[in-house]
Image (cartoon, rainbow, N blue to C red; front, side, top):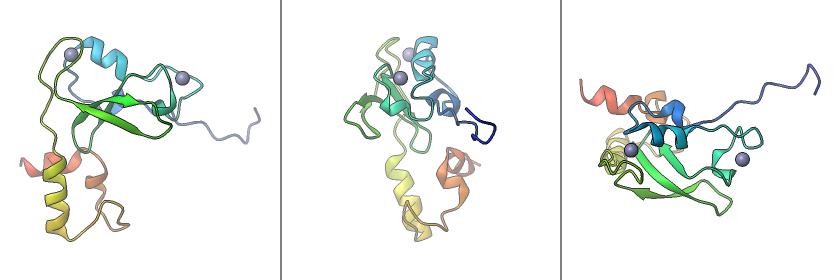
Length: 120
Ligand SMILES: [Zn+2]
Ligand SMILES: [Zn+2]
């Protein structure tokens, strides 16, 4: 390790999840792994994912990529999880005439922010 090494960004689903249903969910969304600090999907210890853009929780599929199977209920406390906003998101993008990878896509559509500006 030299002084020139940029600090590695730690990615954790817990950082984006504002309202986890229970402490156990929050625990499992938190990325504690040093080895996979920047890629929780790659960590065999990571069980669940959270997508802030769609407000979706999922069980991670360890196929080497960022894939997960969406879940409607918490596996630990049984709470009903928020309804996915995926369809609404793509409706919104259609309305804006944009696509998910667009450079011009407003910053709000890269996080949970777009969901909040709708409710005001
Ligand atoms: Zn790991
Ligand atoms: Zn729960």
